[in-house]
Image 1 (cartoon, rainbow, N blue to C red):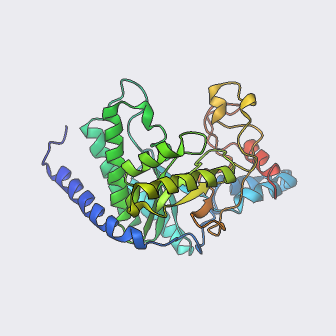
Image 2 (tube, rainbow, N blue to C red):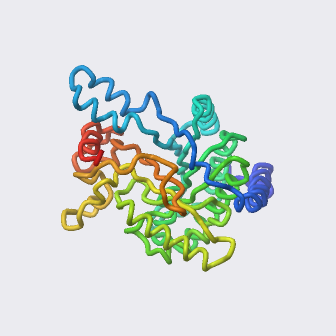
Image 3 (cartoon, rainbow, N blue to C red):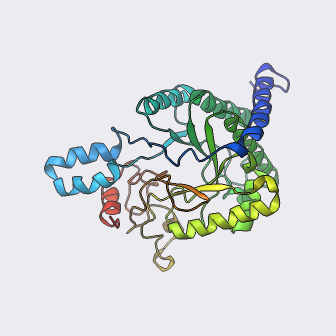
Length: 335
């Protein structure tokens, strides 16, 4: 049954979002870099850890290489397939904070896609708002970093004008709601340096409510050189500052999980999927740290889990964890 305008659920969601907008606007300017001195969580049950332990006797040299991944912190991903999202987030927050670490979460469940027939109706919009509200409730008053909706803005131009407005509104609502939490740091995703021009991405981020976020994330799941992403992020931050004084000094984080050798050279990309899906010959990038030496870069993080397959392409099946790919990333790392 469709929820009617003015229903109890609709009013509750609207009220929560309005309060989030007010609180988020008031506190974001004073928010510091929570990642600078944070202890990040190393999952003792990650796929990389399990694989390294499994190979310890039969393939000890490979197990040692996988320690490069297993010993490092990675982000937790929450999607529409995460079940009871509030309970899942709360459970993970409790586990990570009990270990004395800072949760770093990816929230990705944006409705709509690039098909011409795609239309996000009222039901889907309300479902997303309920979902992101549940994420926020799961975090509660705890400290956490949330990377919001990877690729949602970079893919905006493929949508119809109506669907673009719907997505931007949902992103603004999500930023407001999460930023209203007193200890939550929000980074709205900004794609990567080889996708959209900095001027275009800055405009998208502005329209999606980045003013109330700490900043934006770059290179999530991609392979861009760290230096390229830093230059791109600085260009975006500079353009945001020229748009409004309230947008000055926007910081960003960079996913360095697979960018040690940069992207596969264009000449070696034989088909479109090669540009993003399980690129061959890649390497781990800089280890996660909140001490980047760059004034605008809050952290280098491993947001994409090294060794997680992007999908059934370039030698991978439908499996989630691809140990041989992980091994290759570790073998080619500069450390």
